[in-house]
Image 1 (tube, rainbow over the protein chains, first blue to last red):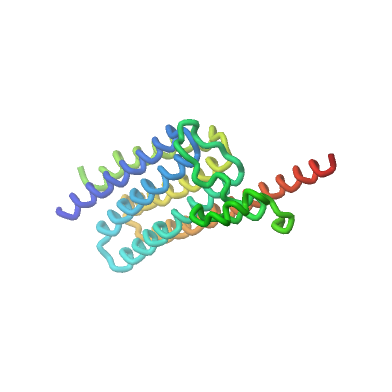
Image 2: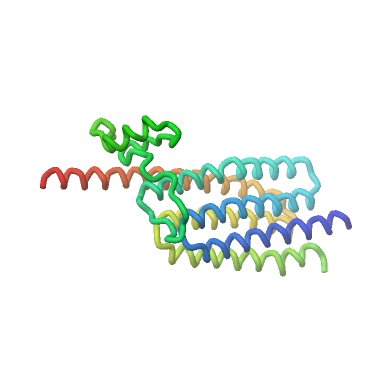
Length: 138
Length: 102
């Protein structure tokens, strides 16, 4: 009986988070906001729904499988989101016009995709002088 | 109301609605990055639908397929972003060559 209540709570919360992520995915104004909204909410939703499956079966093999899936999703979804956001930034995807700042602006070489940290002032100066070296072409 | 009925009549419709919303963005999506993220999201919601079905039909073996889908989702995102970056680089080189010729 207790496990039934737990399953209902966990699955409802998980479905709610996934629904919120989907609504945010449709409503958000630019692709970076969309990526950032969906990755977190969907990761949480998946974790809760799979946990409800683990409680329902109450079996060591199923629980370990569920833990493996959750661990894998938690490890890979931020990496995937970062990769695709980086690719879309280099593609010149526009940010929302009401965005406050673009911290990456002028801090990377467009051909080699090499980033410099803003704290390293010499590096930034050098990049302004020679923004795109021929040797960086790959 | 048993737990199977609850999952079947309340949780699965919610998940189906969210799949529809994500599919809207997949069709509309202005940039290619939106489409890639939508594809990733569709697969990820598919994993949860498989988990719910494995509870409803009491078949724990369905979870194996959920695991493999998770692997494939990550692989597809990485491959798409890799080729997107490569395409951008090629486009920029082409532009540069045209400018030099002028």
